[in-house]
Image (cartoon, rainbow, N blue to C red):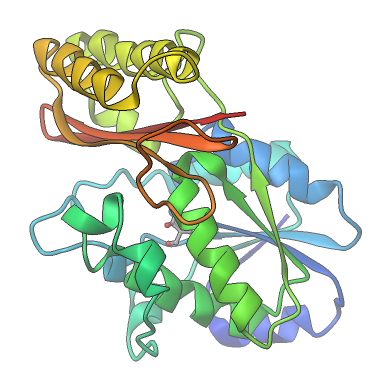
Length: 271
Ligand code: PAF
């Protein structure tokens, strides 16, 4: 497995390859990321993973400084699952990046309400990576469903010939969606965190037969009783993220909470 740290070396390396399957990450890899790499490995060409904690997607009051950085361990995991090349650019990679705006309709909803800068920062850094790598395929986890939709929209409107693949959420045995932020939870918080996916699934299973507003109010109440601070609890259209009052096919139930300062998100597509 090749490890590349400079843009120049990456450009030289990529000259030899036509089909690049790209998995962008911020490191601290878990089984969710590794499932993206395994998916990428199924396609012809080489699998390239980037590890870069993107400062553009963090606001000054957010957790950039404490975001877990575990490069040595990450590289070991990637080697084990036959990743071909890892690009770990230096922090100055984000300097001078062209600032782009994510789709206004999609980026103002859900996570975009409390994190207005977030998706613009993501689209800007991804465009920087995409222009450099010109990937044939890119892979995104569906836990970050809104991110997936926004990147898909961005690619549809760009001149890049890149296909996007959404990969299903990977969960811990107790149901908690895998996330690098799970490592920031204390053992007690970790036990409580598992309840999020239980409430998510219970609520989703009742969506076809009960009033959605009732389910929303009950869901928020249950989460608050468990000490979660609820950022949003939304039944929405899974293509537009528009809030809905009545169940329709492909409704997305999306939840974001804060538990002891740790932000957790999860979602369920109700078909
Ligand atoms: O999902 C993430 O880890 C990040 O938002 C991404 C796509 C690597 C961009 O920094």
